[in-house]
Structure formats: structure tokens, C-alpha cells
Image (tube, rainbow, N blue to C red; front, side, top):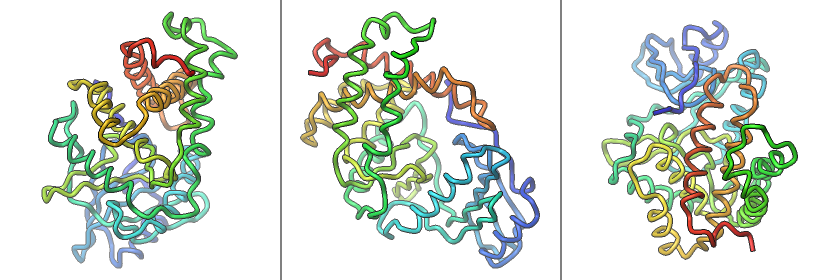
Length: 314
């Protein structure tokens, strides 16, 4: 099974001046560092320990590895600094921005990623945590989900304008419907809940004390509470072992959410994954396109299995 894992550098690969800046935040020299798997950033992601016993999580990236990644780290720092203490997120201890290199220093969270395929009890824990997260006060500078995802949900339009030769026959047959559904899905992204928009197993930590912590926040926005729940079920669908349509039906009924809006948003996500997967790999991210392809296959199989009626935008 494909996993959300990229190719990372480690703590010792960071320039000495970056390590010194991080150690200044921590108040002592780092004597131990363990690289963490998961995620696609080509930068570092290390749990570190100082000579004085202080622990932290450090992530750092340079523009040389990927031109876009430093700005994502800057955006994550802005979001992390603005999140209220009640949010189930790690505390940002400090950061360094030297222009070329950006480093973030977080509290170290004891925990592990959920098991995939997802275990039912762990899935329920995360669903409950996302419900709680949606009630957290949202920082006002965040964009709306419709603003943040407008380009992503235009994926089917780009494909329709230039259909690839290997387009799946079912997609080709329903391309007009998928374009219209994605448009409906974008218009449905209304709300003021705090939304992470990148919910996956590798962005979640489960503590032995029952605590659920959501990490990696550069894509945070304001939107409907159901969006993160939907993205969670996309990840569940990817790894298999669950009846995702039944899970989504149960969530929609319990939360009073329009099921057709959820199907439309799924179509928008499928367009994003499908459009992204056909493009060359970004610098430093050699595994991203394969993961997007796997997500595209998972969501498209979900849409194909859906009753005919939801596959209409009217």
C-alpha cells in the first residue's frame, strides 16, 4: 500500500547556522535527533533532545530543495502562532527565517500515527477530535475554504480543456458531470469552522492518554466543519477496510449535512488528485504524484460506486 512518505534530509544535514538558531530557541545544544517518516516535504523532520534534556520537534526547509516549501513553513508559523491554546495542536516554541532556510520548533508530542488500514476505535477517536476542532475559535486572517481550494477544485475543468490520452473511460463519459459537481462542491464550502484541509493518518498523532493531536497546518482555512471529516474518510478509503459510503451517510445524517454537497466535494477532490497526478513531480517531491494517483483512484472508485442520482449537479 502506498504511503504518504517523501524523501527527507535529517538534522545533521542542516547548515550549522540553522542548527545554532534552533539550539538558541531550545536553550542548549542538540545531542540527539531522530528523523520522522511521513509527509512529502524534502526538508527535515526530527524529534530532538538537548544536552539539558529538553525535547522538541524541528522541521526545516530551504528553497534549494523546493522553491515553494519555505513559504509553506512561513504560513504554518503564522497559523500556529495564531491558533488558540485550546486547539489540539503542538505549541510553536519558536522559528527561524533566514530567507533561504526556514525552521520551525514545536513542543515534542508523545504519540504515534493511526494504524492503516484504519482501526475502528482509532477512527472514532479522530472523528470526535475533528468535531471538537471545528468548534475552536478560528483565527480571523485565515482565508475561506472556497478561496483556498478554488484552483484545486478546477482540476476537472483543466482536464476537460486538454483531456489526456489515457483518461479513464468512466471519467471521459462523465466529465461534464464531474466539472459541474466540482463547481457545486466549491460553492458548498461555506462555514467559519477551523479547517485543517490536509487530514491524513501521517498528520495525526494518537497519545497513550487518549489525546489526538493534529500537526502540519500550512493549509488551514475557514470552512464547513464537514470538510475535514470528508478528507478523513478519503484517507480511510485509500487504505481500505471500511464501508466509506456508509460512514459518510452516517456522518451526514448525524451532523445534518446535505449528502449531495458531500458527493460534490468528493468530485472536486477527485479532480484535484487526478489533475495533479498527471503532472511532473515538483522539485524534491518524487513520491507525491504516485500518492495523488492512489488518492484519485480511491475517490473515483467511490464516485463510480455511488448511485446514479448524486452524479448530477442539478
